[in-house]
Image (cartoon, rainbow, N blue to C red; front, side, top):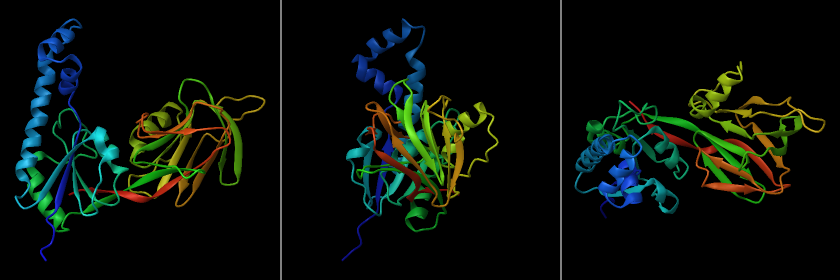
Length: 299
């Protein structure tokens, strides 16, 4: 019986131009809306054409016998990945983070359609190289960089994965109240929430906090089996402390948190607030290195 041909799953997101058309109905209405605000639609159209051109290159590069599926970022939570899929993410670095938590080891090829606008840390490849990348990856000939991920597990069985970081706190600007435990140290805190970041996330939100607080903590590398946590704006009071506001979680080290919020407590990952877990008083959360990694195609 012949082997099943490889399947390429292309992950994309709507361009700003497409989002405007969906909101306003026609190009003319969208252009008028932008003009009233001193902006021009032509710039968004140019970016849209560049991305569509890259999309066409990728689709032409897929060999005829191979299978192909395109999925929008907004549909990832309803899409079923197969174990042997070759995943291609076309867009900004954040798109790789969006798809990573739905995978179980499948290789990801990040393609940058706009190298003059996107950093390309997780999408380092040019569209013109995709044909060779697909062939080599399918044959096992491309090096894979294993990027550490972070997992937050609730005592009721709910679990959330993230590539960059998880946030735990209150959904609004109110203070989050909780009991934080790291190793043998425990402290009751009131803060703007906390993040637990991977080495990949250490170049983003965690780095911003690290610089703002003038922290001397060494941030983990992208492939390092370690996490870093930062408490945001911990408030000192008669009942809450500020002694445990940052630290490394190496190996299987975990951070434990018990919620002391009757409502509004949330956990979300990689900045996607809509994909969240609600956290109620007394619920316990354990955050540590995930048992799965992102396999990013490099080279």
